[in-house]
Structure formats: C-alpha cells, structure tokens
Length: 295
Image 1 (cartoon, rainbow, N blue to C red):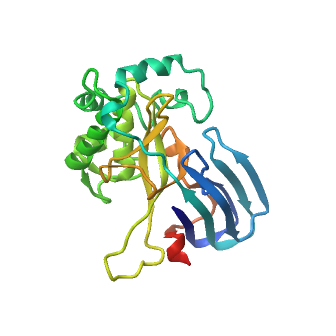
Image 2 (cartoon, rainbow, N blue to C red; image 1 turned 45 degrees about the vertical axis):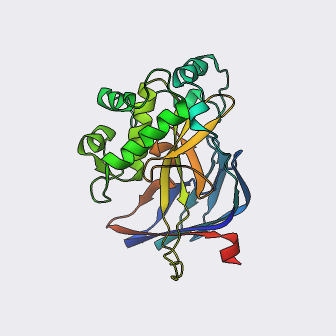
Image 3 (cartoon, rainbow, N blue to C red; image 1 turned 120 degrees about the horizontal axis):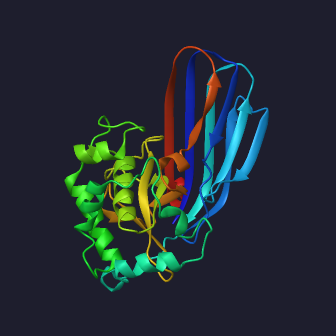
C-alpha cells in the first residue's frame, strides 16, 4: 500500500522569539516492511543552519537553528511511502517465548535493527514488578511468542480505558498502569515494560495509523494523528513483529512507521529550545492518504 503523508506543526508565540533550535524526527524510516520513496521537510522561517544525521536507532534526525525573529514557527514534513508489512504467520507455530529470550543473549547484532538495544530498562520504561506480573499472565511456560504477546495486546486493549485527558507526555508508566487509563503512548510503554521485565526485546514505534472515514463521508483534511505501538523481536526467522495495544491488532499495512526507539524520548517528532518570554500554542495537522485516494 502506497501513501502520501503530510505532517504540519505550527507553534504560535505570545511574544517574539529570537532564537529556536529544534530536533526533528519527521522523516519516515525505511525498513524491510516499509520503503520511503521520497520525503522532504520545510521550516518557516528558514533555518540559518541545518545538521542532518542518522540517529542511534536508524532514524534521520535534522537539527535546525532559526535565528530570524518570529511569532510563529511552521514545520511541514511530506513523504511518499510504500508499506508492505510481512505477515507474522500462524501465531500458534511461532517459537516459545523462552526460546526467544535465550536467543537474545546469543545474538551479536548490535545494529539499530538488532535486539540488544531494546532489552534494558530506560527512565520512561523501567522494570516495574506489577507490570511484569501482569505480562506474565499471558506469557505462560512454553507458549508461542506471537500468540502470547497477541493475548497481552488484547488484554491491554480490553482492560485499559483510552482517555486523552488522563495522562501527559511526562506521566510515569507505573502511574498510568495503576490507573488503567491513558493514550497510545501509555499503552505502548506499559507493554514494553512488561515484556522487558520477562527478558524480551521490545521497541517503541512512533508513526501513523491510516483512518477510514464513515461510509459516504469525505476524509477530513488534517484530522489524522500520530500513533504509537510496540515492536517485539521474535527471533531471527520472524524478526520484528508489531503489536498495537490501543486497537488490539497486529501492525499491518495501515501502520506507517516514523521512528523506532527504546521509549517515547527516543522518537519524539519535535523537541528543542527557544529563547522568548510568554506562552505558546501548538497545532498539529496530519494527513495519511492512500495513493489511489490522493490521485
């Protein structure tokens, strides 16, 4: 499935900003399940300096410096993407999860696509005994890894309430778990904590989910949004398999990957600093359009 993607972010400031430095992770990532055919990023006012590099987890990272005085900063990313997610196969015949845990310790792959970087706790995804115990209910001895993680995926969807007002970006994962509510970021990081607590590599995926308007209704321009889900290393043969606990599904051709990391901090689309006084407002518009619809 091919898509046209547009992600437009507008910062409006109460007072003039004299300097801004932003780190942009807005270029989708090519992988075995996704090919970026073309992409570009526009920043207004135009940056006086741009540093273009590849981050530690394989994402393209732009650091832009804007020193033209401004009252609004507009960042628009566009991309043309071919998504071809490999099928996970029959979950019942995937290797036992303990086999995968043992294979991780023998893997010598230290690249961004290897399992090692996604095995250990981080400040946002610590080992929380209660979350590990919650995950263990699904990962019973000898159970195939895809079937076990798929059940955990469904349980989080069924037992946690989606509530955008319940948490913030900085809400600790243990707090979201105890409250049993949150958003896709919380559900993904809860799932990651549980799996890493059992010795399994799990990555945080930032991206987009294609939305389908009701029958007979047009797509609403700018109404799509960023999304988060989990990618679990299931051995050399299966590789990474995506699980979306917000929707209780496996990631497929409707999931467009922007960046992969250990937690949200590694993949935040935009972060940085400004020199100014006063407040600011933020507006984000996202369009994920299948190529046939765009045509």
